[in-house]
Structure formats: C-alpha cells, structure tokens
Amino acid sequence: GENVEQHPSTLSVQEGDSAVIKCTYSDSASNYFPWYKQELGKRPQLIIDIRSNVGEKKDQRIAVTLNKTAKHFSLHITETQPEDSAVYFCAASRGAQKLVFGQGTRLTINP
Amino acid sequence: DADVTQTPRNRITKTGKRIMLECSQTKGHDRMYWYRQDPGLGLRLIYYSFDVKDINKGEISDGYSVSRQAQAKFSLSLESAIPNQTALYFCATSGGTGRNYEQYFGPGTRLTVT
Image (cartoon, rainbow over all chains, first blue to last red):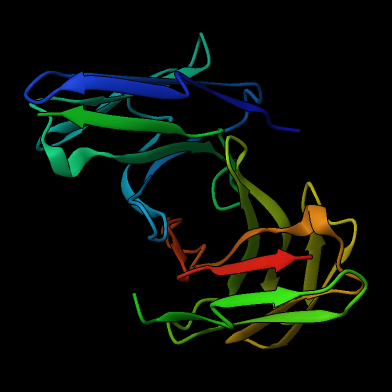
C-alpha cells in the first residue's frame, strides 16, 4: 500500500521568510496530493491540492510542486505570517480513494 | 464547519468499557471516514465507508468497529477500551465524485482511557 513520509517534523522560521515542507510517496499510481492545515485545537482543513497532470499550483502565498518521477511533492509558503503557525499534513491517494497522510510538520513563525 | 459534527467532544472512560463515538453530516456526502490522531503520527485511518452498504478497514482497525446507520451517520465503537486507545478521533466526509476529493473533518473527539 501507499506510504507517505513527511519532513521536517518541526520547522521554525522568521516572520517574512519562506517555509518549505517536503513529502515523498511510494505508490506510483497515486495521482492526488492535498495539503491540510491544522491550527491548535482545531480540525484539519484543506489549503491546497495538486493532481498528477500538473507540476505546480499556486494560491496567493502558498504553492505546491510535484515531481512524479522522483515521487515527491512540496509545500512552499512565502512571506510567512504569524497565522501560518500550525501543523501541516501532506497526503496522497489514487483519485477519490482513501487518503494516506504524512506524519505532520509543526511550523512555528517567529516574530 | 458545522456540516460535520461529532459527539461526544470529550470522553473519559475506564479500561474494558465499551464506548461509541458518533458522527453526523449534512453535506450530503456518500463517503465517510474515521481517523485517529496521535502526536508525531499524523492522521491514521481506522475505517471508511463509501456508501451505506460499504465498510472497509483502514490501517489500524484492530480493537475498533463501525456502523453506517444512514448516509449521514457513521459511528465508531471501541468494544473494550484500553489505555493505548487514548487519542484524538476525527470523522471526515467527502463527495468523491466529480473530481471533488476534499475531505471535510469534524471537530474531533478527545478520548481518554484510564
């Protein structure tokens, strides 16, 4: 079955700097890669996703890149702000099948 | 997101007790999921259901059972609770069709087994 590895487990950056979180997956048939954000005490919520027919997707300050050959994808957050502090999860699936999540990255933005 | 609700929100129970966690949704989604969240381990899938007559085991189903009572309701049971089942439990739903794969999570149930 699918296995998703996520790094780093914790990340601390200065406000205004960029943050990058990386994930690798094992199932070459996976074609859907979402990222979820979980603020302290809250539920996970989708922030961006990418499908295997594109290599990059942007939404304001966040972007996701996908390298199908290497089976890895990354989340990029630019101009970080205090409200970006949260736990971020990557995940992978074959289309609408069940998601397999990475272990999570705790991102802290230092003022 | 009030469209996915979970009861109870917090529960403390003793080892050996049977406990049921309930999930309801008003999003009209066919697909429902139960996850467990432990620090450093991410979200692990316990059971999932793609429609009322479909139940599937996830990666950590041992010690758990589920019931899909209706399209809108999906319950998780711990037949005989043990301390290492202490965790945060999330229910989620998704449409699964029309290329809409987003999962919507409930607020979570914090379960403590003493």
